[in-house]
Length: 326
Image (cartoon, rainbow, N blue to C red; front, top):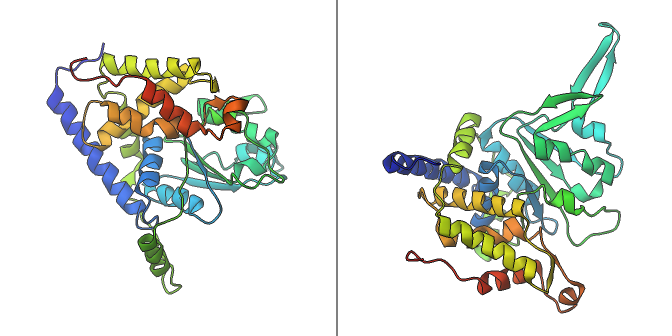
C-alpha cells in the first residue's frame, strides 16, 4: 500500500520534476519551434521508461526532434538508418573473431546507447524489425546464447513516413504495442516557420548542450510511479478500456497493458504540471498518443472514414468523467 503520509515531500518532488521538465523542453524547443505538444510528449515518453514512434510526412522535423531530445540528455546516443539491407547484427551487435587473443569479441550495435534513433523503421525487413523486440521489452539483447543487459535510461525513438508504402514493411501489432506513444510533428505555423528560416540561415549552426544528467532522468522516472491516482480514476481508465472493447466500430480494443501505460503517462503529466496527483484531464490529454496505435477499427468504420483518433474520442465521450464527489 502506497504511503501518502508525507504530502509536502511529494509536492517538493513534483516541483523539482516540473522544473527539470521545463528546462529540458526549453532546450529542445531552441531547435523544434512551435511544437510544444510534440516536444512535451516525447519527454514524457522518456520519463515513463517508454519508446516513441514518430509518424509524419518528410521534412517536418521527426529526426531533428529525436536528435534534439537526445542532445539535451547527458547520455550515450546511437542512430541507425533502416534500409532493406540492414541486418539484425547491425542493430544488436556481432561476435568477431580476434586473431590476436584467439577468442571471439563482441562488438555492440546501435542498441547499446541510452537513446537510440531508428530512422524509417518500416524500411527494414521484418527480421531486422524483430531484432528490436527483446531490447524494447526486456532491456536486454541475446546473441549466440549470451544475454547482455542494456543501460538505463534506454529509449528507442523510431520514425516512419505514413504516406509512402513502396518498399516498406508495416509494423505488426506486436511491434506497435512496444511503443508507449505514437505522435506526429505536423507543419509549423507561419511565425514558427519564419523562426526556422532565421535559425537555419546558413551562417550559424545551433548545437545543443546537455541540460540534464542521466541520473536525473532515472530519478524522475522513479518519481512517476509515486504519483497518487485515486481509485475512482483507476475505475475511469478501466471503464474506458471496457467501452472500447464493446464498441462495434472497434475490433481490437484497449488492452490491460495499454491501461497501465495510460495511467503511467497521466502520472508523468501530472508531475510536469507540478502536481503529485492525477486528474481526469491528465488521462484524456495523453489518451490519443498512448492508445491511438493500439486499437483497430472494423472495415465498415474505415469505409466510413472513421480514424482511431475519432473512435477514441467517441469512447471517452461515452464514459462519464469522475468528479471530486464521485
